[in-house]
Length: 167
Image (cartoon, rainbow, N blue to C red; front, side, top):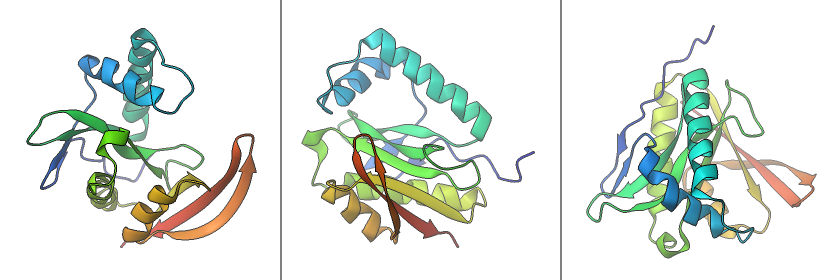
């Protein structure tokens, strides 16, 4: 039995809205994932991924949420909490934005809102895992007070583990 509160699934910042997934997000989510350079997942496959995210949310009480710009109303990425390489007690913060949305502080803004939502659940610590080449992600996490913990080597290269104690 979890002793944690359920995370808020609707977060707003000055410029962004983070909200639950909708079926209508599938095409743009697919386009975002294709920017990783491993091909474009089909919209059907992406719909399945969204369904899996929603199922995980029902189980864990926290979520990965789509990010929309408040004024433009467009989908620019996602941010939230996942089990990832960690645990329900100490989840990972995760985010990914379209390249066109990089460099505007959106990831930091969204992740800050998710950090506050994580504090509200009663958790004591969060993790983040980042590929060692991903300098922009390190900058976001540094601004949010994450500190390097250790490095592991995986099939696709070095992964840096960072952690942040919550108040």
